[in-house]
Image (cartoon, rainbow, N blue to C red):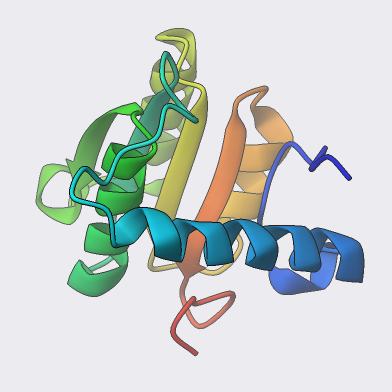
Length: 139
């Protein structure tokens, strides 16, 4: 089975088969993490923007390490860069990242629904790294 969804916004939107596929891939990453060189070319040539507009160091580090190990080019937009931005400005920022031909935007935002709203507007894939109390990866 191939994963065909454009976005990953929450667990409820995934089928049992898609969750199994993700878990199977995660299992293979355990072996990669034990190698002396912890890189695979899976995302070589792809650009990932990590937009962490809510504080969560452990989740940010997890996505950062994952992007590196999968050989993605990536950039980090942090809370300190955007703490003053309202939703409309965040929306423009993410649209700008799409304009730069970013392949995947990973977003952690303090307000529920923001990643979903952005995913509806963008052609770029969006991964929800947590939004408010909704879809938080550590809950």
